[in-house]
Length: 437
Image 1: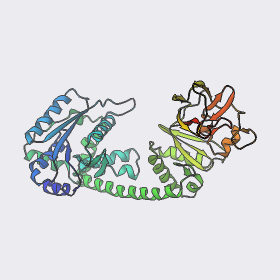
Image 2 (image 1 turned 90 degrees about the vertical axis):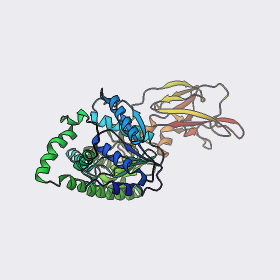
Image 3 (image 1 turned 120 degrees about the horizontal axis):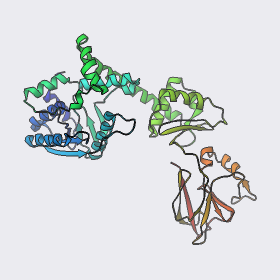
Image 4 (image 1 turned 45 degrees about the vertical axis):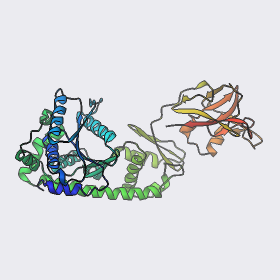
């Protein structure tokens, strides 16, 4: 579809609750065309207009590029914001991914509440993104490429040019006599996107001129399929909730067809805030965890997360380091880092652990054979039995801090206080808090 500034303005004016409109302005031809079109007809725009530029700190010329963008905005009479950061990639990270991650983080942190951020991504960008995701083996969510609208920070990211081709924007920029920047890295075909842009897509267009439009339409269809997957996964998640908060019921998961099992697992992991496992790792979860014996303790891990089972519940966790031996001196007013978790206590009255002022405790991990007598019970119980009865998963049991006064076990994390050591009515006490990540 040709670039139509009037249609663009009409679309933006439908965002009645927005507070401002900011163009993500790199200085390149695409964002310059978008910014100029809006600035030239700002009288028809119901929102204040400005531009924001991100300096990634990757090129010697980046300060000059930022100054160029500032001067363009001054000439158009627009507010200009400069955001700066260091986008040097970490080990194993591509320069493109590092720059993209920094850019969206800076923009998301800065974007004012209820403001719109306009990106100049167009139809050809969408086609490139779909091809990149296809070559990476992505599913419908990845193949849906870039959404036209998405939340960002306290505002909204819009891509209003996804139905407009690169050539149309270039024609507008030339007709208006715009002076845009050319980033030399855009010509480096060692980068995957540039290889597609300069070699593969032009070749495809010689055979199929509508390639970009057709691929963009495929991205839209994949977005619809991904949305349906999300709706099914959301329903399945409600039906398959485990006994403990944030877990899945293995029996309920097992009753689903395998494609819905994988779909639910991806949705659940993402909902819990962890990076998605690969298809191979999902297969291991289904074969090694779902199909394991009820008394087994399988663990499948991937970067940043791991899945474990206990009884009928499936847990997704941050990776747990092996617990080390602990025998530490602790006063309840202090914060103690122990076995990957944090132990602290708050003062209270009439409950918790009763201690004389200045008393210090010894904190240890389980060694086996510990006994504890609870209030209202006439004899000691094996700690192992109490933990099993309470449904504490094995990996939590081996990390629980045990609190000793001398050689007497007086409390087990925030689960129990031994009989005779509880604060009575009106007596000061300490309420123990124990937290694993």
